[in-house]
Length: 241
Ligand SMILES: Cc1cc2nc3c(=O)[nH]c(=O)nc-3n(C[C@H](O)[C@H](O)[C@H](O)COP(=O)(O)O)c2cc1C
Figure 1 (cartoon, rainbow, N blue to C red):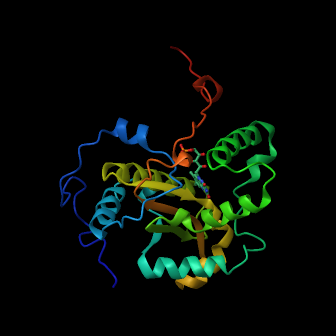
Figure 2 (tube, rainbow, N blue to C red):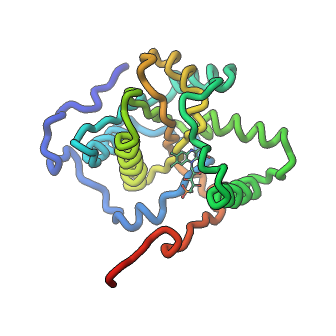
C-alpha cells in the first residue's frame, strides 16, 4: 500500500498534527549514536510519519528541499536485502565517500573508529571471514525493521548534498524523540545502481545512502563502544573572545 506521507504540504510549520514528544534537543543529540544491532520490534507507519513530518522543517539553501527518499519495511525491505546480497558492488561507484581516508589525519580517525567497532563486535583485525560477514550485515542495514533510502537528482551540487545531510540529521534527532534509533549507511552507495534498478528510480537519480531505523538492542556491545571526537580547538578558530 502506498501511504500518503505528506497530506498537508502547505501546513504552517508550527501546525503539527500531533503532540511533540518531551525529549529535549540536548538529550536527543546526546543519546543519538549509530546503532548497529536492533530488536525485532516493528516500527509503526505513524511513528515514521511523525519523524518525516518534523524533518520537513529542516533548512535548505534557497529552500530547495532537494532530498527524496524511499522508505521500506516488511516484505519490500526483505526483497531489497535479498537482491543486494545476490549483487556485486557497483564498479565504478557513483560517488566516492572514502577519499579523505587518503590523508593521514582522517585516516587515523577512521582507523580508531573501526578498531573500536570491530573490537566491540568481537572481530579481529585479520579475520577476513568475520569482516566480510560484518560487511554483509552492514549491507543488510543491520537487520533494522525500517530502511530509508536517500536519493536526489544527480544534478544537485555539494550545497544540496549538505542540505540533505541536515535533513538526515533532523530525521535522526527526531527519531530519538520517538525512542527510535538510526544508523546512516553510505555502504549502500556502493550498490547505487542495483538499488535504483530495484526501486525503479531513474538513472538521473543519485543514491546517496541508507538510514536504518528501529529500536536499539541496548545489550549489544556494538551499540556501546566509546566514540572519539576531536577537541574543539582542532576544528575551530575563535577570535575576539
Ligand atoms: C553519511 C554517513 C554515512 C555512514 N555510513 C555508515 C555505514 O555505511 N556503515 C556504518 O556502520 N556506519 C556508517 N556511518 C556511521 C558513522 O560511522 C558514525 O556516524 C561515526 O562513526 C560516529 O559515530 P556515531 O554516529 O555513533 O556518533 C555513517 C555516518 C554518516 C553520517
